[in-house]
Image 1 (cartoon, rainbow, N blue to C red):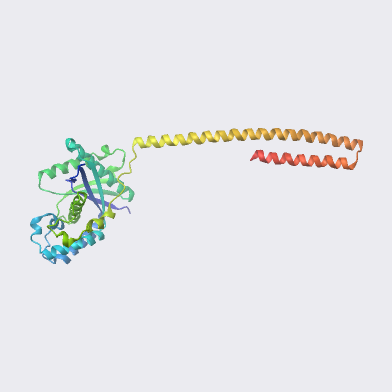
Image 2: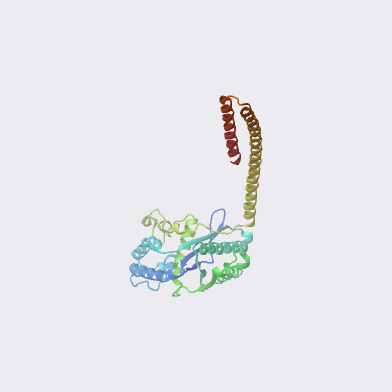
Length: 334
C-alpha cells in the first residue's frame, strides 16, 4: 500500500543576513503513520529529561521562548540540549528547502516563487517515494502577519494545478492543507520539531552557532554544531523532477543531430558495400569467362586425345578458378 506524507511548514521562512539576502522556506516531511511513533518518542524524551516538571512545555518553546527558558533549571536545560542530536538522529523525517534571492522591490513575488518551489519539491519527493499523497500542515498563530503569509501560501496551494501545470496530477498528490494548533494530538509534535529545525537551519545558514548562548554557553556546548551534523543527511537533494520546454527542445535537437549523423554514416557504409559487391561481381564474371575458356580447351583436348598431363592441368585450373569464385562470392555476401 502506498504511503501518505505530511509536510510541516513555517510560513514565515527566514532571510539570510549576507549580502545576497537569500530567502529560505523549510519543509519537514514525516510519513503520516510515523506520527504515532513521533509522539511516543518525544513524550518519552520529555519525561526522561524533565521528569514531570515540564509536561506542559513545548520543545520548541524551550529553545525559542525566553519566558519558558527562564523557568527551567540550568542542569535540566543542559541535559535537554545534549540529548537533542541523538533524538533528531533517531526520528524519521526528511527536510526539503526552497531558497531564492530576495528582491526587496518584489517581496511578494519572491515569496510566491519560494512557495511554488517548495510545493514542487514536495511533489518530487512523493513521486520518488512512490507515495499515495501528501498534505501541508502549518501552525495556527495569533498574529496578523502570519495569517497573511499563510493565506498567500494557501493561494499558491489552491492554484497548484495551474501554476505547476506540467505536474499534471499535483492536485491529487498534494491534496490537504491544514492550519493546526500546536497542542493538536496528531500534528502538534510535528510542528514542534519543524520549528526547532527551522530555527537551527536559520542560525547555521547565517554563520551562527545552532544553539543560542542563552540556552547553553558555547564553552559547555563545544565547537561543533551537533544537531546540524545529525540532520544534514536528512536533507532532500532532488529539488525538482520537472523538465522545461527549453530542456526538451535541447534533448530533441541533440537526438535529431545524433540520428542524422548515424544515418549519414550508414548510407556511406551501404554505398561502400555496394561498390565492393559490384567489384567482386566483376571479378566473378571474369573468372566465369576464364572457366568457360578452360572448358572449351578441355573439350578440344578430349576430342584431339591429347596427353593425360594436359587434361589433368586443365581440370586443375578449372578447380582452382571455381574455388576462387566461391571465395569471392562469400566475401561479397559479407
